[in-house]
Length: 564
Image (tube, rainbow, N blue to C red):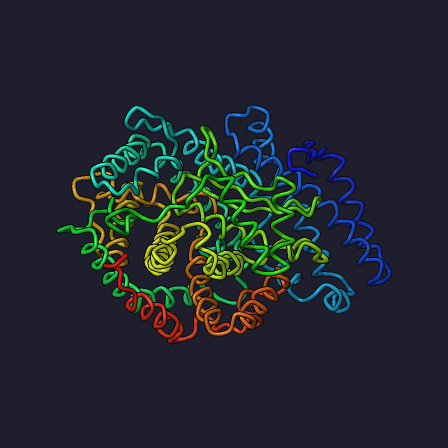
């Protein structure tokens, strides 16, 4: 069935609640684990229906944020999702309190119960109205960014399409494009700063009502981080500062020399070569056709998966006015359908985002038959292993997209992956500092960001852009607003993906087998358990970062980039 034929109907909350509560009652009265298992299956079917309707709505709303019908439906879910969470938490409580818990754990797996325990730490009916407010503010930020109409050289762009000019080989063009884009954020700085200020305060209020000192610990619980904590993450950030920041600095210096510049400015960072970055040699339809061939050759599993995505119209890839920026993958359980959302703009990022989101989609496609919805996806940092590793597993097919510039693309891709890590941990440290100081003003938060930026990105120069020099760069990062503490996940996963890159070059069959096993496991294990299952080394291990990036640095140094 094509996505456009998927049926959307606003859930009838009264009937949904009655059916859900009836199953909870049956579960409470059950005289055996077998009867409780049947209740759990019925409850999961109800949850899958609700989440499917939400995801259909979310996709169609982000495809066109001006569609009045789906805007209203999105508002409905912003209001009602906390009520859904309240029901879900009652289900989790019933699981944990079951007199047949040992038998249930044997049937469903321990991870479900660990997740239930974590989830109960994140909700209480006393925060329901606060959660509704948090959802509303988060949606306001997304709509504000989607509303961007940026006029550049007589054309109107959104925040995705302007990027084509930001990576133009002509320095004056990319400088003007960058200034034009950042002028949108500067003009909306007060609105964005105030939105975030409200988000910080409502999240802090939720945390204190739930008994936490601040939002940090609650944020970790929301992310279902069962086997690591903020202190471990801080030590990991220090590994990045110690080992990666110097290497990134050397790579930026190589880039400055390639570009023939006296000094690398912020608007130069995304352009790796004097004649510009490599671009795919065809339009979006051509790209999809090449991807189909690539996935057919990679493995039978990916061939079946990509046919499913393509045949059922489960991708929306083109940027358009009023379309939300960025890219994501979601899953519509009632149709067992992953869905990829992106904003192609004619740059190499189109290939990066396609393979990245396809990694997410392939994972959830591989675990679509999981016995309970909690196991369709793992936690976010594990999810990003699938996506970032898929970017590397598809390296042998980059010739399909870039022709004789394929090696150039591989160099840029690996260079970018390494240079991302300092930025990624900067975003994470910023979020910790923000929620540890919830009374800070918007101006103080900007100063926090600029201080952290200088720590991890000491090469960055903003010249005469006052908005960026005063710490406004973080305003563009949607994760900070919409999914607090979701960013270190990319950094942890990148170290795991680097391990797959190295192993794939040594023994593709073994590396791919471990990757498929990881995807099939879905969310049935915690992050570190999944890392172990995949025969990877934990990013938290002392010395892991240094050992992983050594081969990466060596490969980059071996490339004669002056000849590209």
